[in-house]
Image (cartoon, rainbow over all chains, first blue to last red; front, side, top):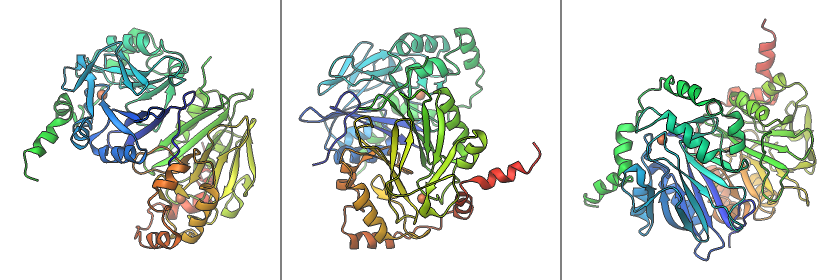
Amino acid sequence: GIILLGFEGSSRLLFRQLFEKESATYTYLLADLAHPEKPAVLVDPVDKTVDRDLSLIKDLGLKLIYAMNTHVHADHVTGTGLIKGKIPGVKSIISKASNSKADVFVEAGDKIYFGDLFLEVRSTPGHTVGCVTYVTGDGPDQPCPRMAFTGDALLIRGCGRTDFQGGSSHQLYKSVHSQIFTLPKDTLVYPAHDYRGFTVSTVGEEMLCNPRLTKDEESFKAIMENLNLPYPKMIDVAVPANMVCGLQDLIGRQTEPV
Amino acid sequence: GIILLGFEGSSRLLFRQLFEKESATYTYLLADLAHPEKPAVLVDPVDKTVDRDLSLIKDLGLKLIYAMNTHVHADHVTGTGLIKGKIPGVKSIISKASNSKADVFVEAGDKIYFGDLFLEVRSTPGHTVGCVTYVTGDGPDQPCPRMAFTGDALLIRGCGRTDFQGGSSHQLYKSVHSQIFTLPKDTLVYPAHDYRGFTVSTVGEEMLCNPRLTKDEESFKAIMENLNLPYPKMIDVAVPANMVCGLQDLIGRQTEPV
Ligand SMILES: [Fe+2]
Ligand SMILES: [Fe+2]
């Protein structure tokens, strides 16, 4: 059989980072290899790369149980709806605060188990009202260093915009400082996007090198208010679809004869 | 100071994967954190992303000593020439068999040290005559699992084309089977490119799932002979520049007044 690779400090975690180039989105696959069923989760899957992700999951002999989002994305349609159509039994997860549809709603402090590994939910609003960060567990059998899937709250040397979807630069500043920068400095930062080809950072590195979040709150707010970003081209399609966990497309298809 | 992250099984290796989207090229940064100078190497840097790479190296407090190529690339201009211009003292490395310019020429069995860590050179011709794979060392203080930087010899679920630059499907088949598939199955495969958003694989995974290299040699040759790929658009610019380690551009600039 295939030899699967564990993550540092934990031979049981399989971890893969996957990239969707049009929206520059990272999808993350995590699985518990020590559990007989090899249960797996996908964080922030994209509709366009669902087939790639599911074929990898099949190659690795994993059992996908959750397809989860860090927030209601405005730049791509989530893959959760398509995945649920292709693998019955997979449950979608999003934060309760997002006010969106999903099978499971989570809030700060919740633990999402896959086998004996888990992701802890941290509330990190500011880019959107319902943004959460998923952090690998703290404990002897959990991956070390920890890994934080920050969505668009904290990006590598950047952060998500705060000018729509209930965004607030005050809230984002508070979220990152109280919920992410308080993690151990060696915690790996895995964001939902990178536009320059970086794949990972650490909490310690962002605390020292992030050009926005190393500033005081007033300077941060001034930066965020003067970004002059264009209206996101996908937002009017992506947000309504993502509010129903990407199921719109699927519902449309199911009504047509095959 | 910043907390730098080590790699699994070796707290001394810092490792970063970096992506250049136009040519879908991966550049790899490795450094020995336990050495007082934090010596670092870049594998397959791209001219367009040199500033990004050097700013990361500066943020992390590393000392770049080598800029090395797996082969003479046909799809992008190497960053080695620009890097040498920006950081005097950095040495470029390429295989002797590539017949290109560089400061240091390597061949099968050579060890390239950065601090107390090293990369071992394996000869993997077939995509080009001078292709090599750089593999992290085997030993108690070296990273575990091992990591293979395969260039275009072995890609994730694919391989480099064999229809130019002295390519040979017979040679490529032999190279991958004798030099890469003989590594421990948990060896991480880090290719020079990925066009579908995969970031890493393992030797064991490719031995079971690679749609080309799991075939017998005759079937492999038939696949490679029938790819009908277009003439690479960058080849007439990239190959001459890369034969002189990307220095053409630099030489051109140095003759102009600053
Ligand atoms: Fe977002
Ligand atoms: Fe190549």
